[in-house]
Length: 102
Image 1 (cartoon, rainbow, N blue to C red):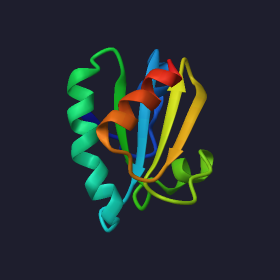
Image 2: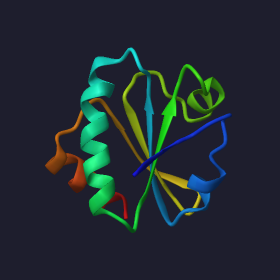
Image 3: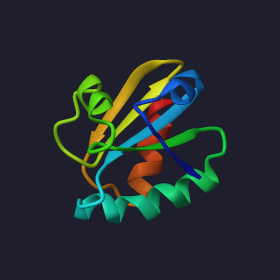
Image 4: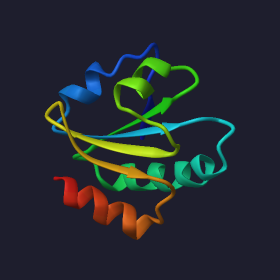
């Protein structure tokens, strides 16, 4: 399950062994395409936390992670950014990218 981040609060994600943070917006077409793929992968990868950040509702986080285009995926391992991916990814590529961030 992808957990929606509220009030710029990423404490849970930063405490996870590995977290994938999806920076998105409701008006973004590629974000709408990526959402279901992320949801499916999150059900399979139970050892990884998945978090959704609406950049319009959480602009401080978007700025903190230097997100200039969406969708942007940021991989955080033990509180440190270990990977960043911009744009839509099909499921096989997404799984491969997540594995490379472990």
